[in-house]
Image 1: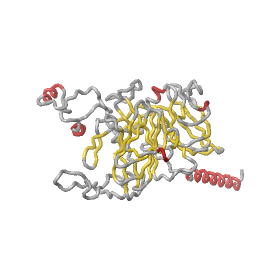
Image 2: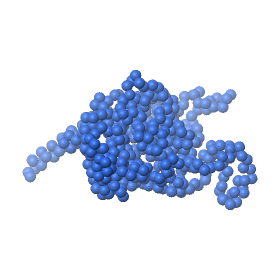
Image 3: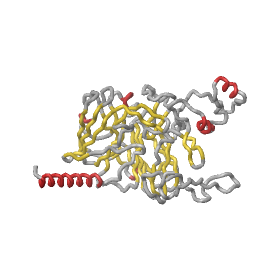
Image 4: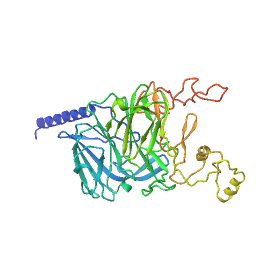
Amino acid sequence: MSKPVNAIVVAVAVVVAGLLAARMQAEPYTPVVTPNGATLPWKLVDGIKEFRLVAEEIDWEFAPGMKVKTWGFNGRTPGPTIEAVEGDRVRIYVTNRLPERTAVHWHGVLLPSGMDGVQGLSQRGIPPGETYVYEFTLRQHGTQMYHSHGDEMVQIGLGTMGFFIIHPKEAPAIGRDFAIFLNEWAIPPGTSRPDPNVMTDFDIFTFNSRVFPGTAPLVARAGDRVRIRIGNVGQDSHPIHLHGHSFKVVATDGGDIPLSAQWPETTVLVAPGQTRDIEFVATEGDWALHCHRRHHPMNAMGHDVPNVLGVSQQGLEDEIRALLPGYMAMGERGMDEHLEHAMHMQGPLNTLPMMGGEGPFGGIGMGGMFTVLKVREKLASYDVDPGWYQNPPGTVAGPAGRQPEPTPPVPGLDPHAGHHP
């Protein structure tokens, strides 16, 4: 091939690549942010959006100090978020690197029966090492999910799920769009592999398979219209509560809720198999977002601990310490002292303390399904944690009869600059 022809081929390839990149950048929606997660890339092939998923065993960090052997997609659990637009035709290649057969169900997606992904019913199971392809046209919009539909108890129980988000052709104006997957796990202290046989007695509860203090904050600018999409294919229902805001539930996995049927809430219940989308206008501050079942914003929950509230342990601690060096009595006055103990007591290997995470005023006393919505008037970047909110003078609760305590400053941090603390 002559040099001029080579140059023409290269030039055409560059133009095509540029057009494809422009098309991807010009999608008519605000891209979804999956905190601690990722979005699945795609490429356009003959007018079809092609995605690739790999089901595999992975080592996943729930929070610093705890890594777990889970199953997932493309090196993570939940798997990367799939985003497309109503009317798109999609082609999804699924490679199975699990030790048993699997299939992928596109939960809530309207499609041909043979593409529904139920092992043995709508298709043969994908054998280990093989790749199957799913292809269909998207005939709806909304927050949907994907997950294994073969040996669900084990495969979903170990983390094989993800979001499938289909945007409308004319998307509403959204400033920030987040997606959070709920899940619960049974991981006995000192171990690293979840037990999928457990039905109800879970001890770890996660947002996007992370627990506080390992959960990433949700960062927004004051005045932004924010959407949070919440999905659940676990065993438990979760009432998710947002502080400082009143929101409306605007959509379910079945579609948009008409404006006349929406009402204000501060907590939304998400049951197994459901998604719920909430929307609100962001107000400046640091606001907790968590499950409101009392045990779920905790880590490593042991349910056989005796109730010693109000029981004097005077002298008993020394006697037990003679048999068990390092023992510290706890629970006589409540569990807040666990925070102090966790700071200087070594726990079981690969196990997080029940409560963790330091805030600007001390230990937050939460774990599990807990994170923070951080909203600022001035924000340099959505992609950087802006640090702790600097409360205006006179707006922090404090001891009666004294001047209110200001937010402790973070050394070297401009609260409006968008830098890490």
